[in-house]
Image (tube, rainbow, N blue to C red; front, top):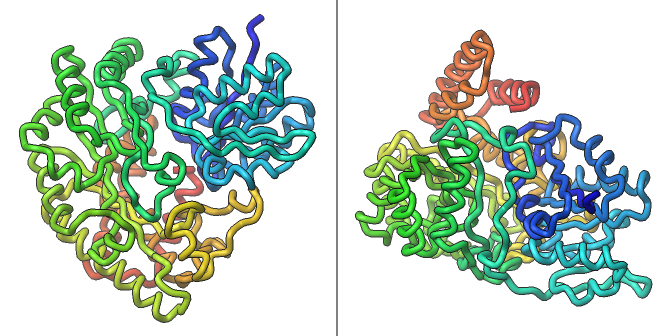
Length: 513
């Protein structure tokens, strides 16, 4: 019987919203283990209805349990499964990795439900941890860069590590999960699978944790390997689209061009989108490169426009200009590429609430002015806006603490921190003490409701996922009503008396959308 490893990823939704996505982080971690012939059991909400029960069952006879977690709800579910595992298998080592443990390895390892922590890329590190556990050489963990653990002498922290070339890693083993449960509908395809082709980001945005975790380094798979792997996924799983989940896909223009050339030459007829890129980089791409990307199937780019104020862009080290944003939008419109713009509001300018309220109002007003202009360039784009959430290590973090952010002291405390609470009307939803509850609700209302309802592409592809014709018609009618109300609110900049938004939140929670 093969030796077994269990890997767990909890839901990122506070009310258990099920999203059909491949657990990419766990699949990547499984690559060396799978190549070595081990049995890897991946547990995620998209793969099992009762994924907690499945994880407990599969942990029997396992060498260890690996848990990945982002800051927020995934920590809560990680702690829940860790407690159940400790109760049932008290001697089974529990290894934590992912974004949050990578940011705060010391506070993570202090939790009694954590035995080992992995910082950064987990592919090779986790494999080496398993090798140590198989051989009973627990203390040899000290030789693995980026790994922290508990020993008889106390906590051993080994935070120093470097980013490894991804081309050294085996292919991500999609075939160890039920891929049909990972495919979803998107604006650009009916059978979309998720994929990562690079790791890290070379930029210096002051609100971001990439510079902390990866020291502004960027590594990527070679273009030929990306094309080969997309061809494999295209032929084996009959996909028609790929969602690219890189932190920054467009860093190397030649690599992008080589990927596009390869897709065209191999006649791989897929659409691809969600590709994250920086506006200052993309506006420098020549028009023949834009045409090539269009010909190769690029349908959507995700980008952080962040603010409608140059003052804010300069503060957060975005290294971008207002002119770049408009030029970029016009290029995407010309080549029929949808843009998913991401904005951030609620910066901790001051601990003085009245002053900060004025600054946040200016942030929101300038953002709405800019989105108006962008919608005049192209009506098919979508906008997201989040309240600034401080994450430790980023250069804006100390600013947030100075102006009222109360840093959680425990791993469980960090489970309550979210970028955009799913129920903004719940008491205590706002943890950003430098802005008012009313402003926080407005920012979240814009994100979840106003801009969400304005995206009619979303209406159509969400409706495709509803099999019952009657409920599909009801959904479209409700969406159209929401669209009309959102459009009126946006046109007149009237966001008071949010009864319609309250109903939207309750409905969204009810149907787990």
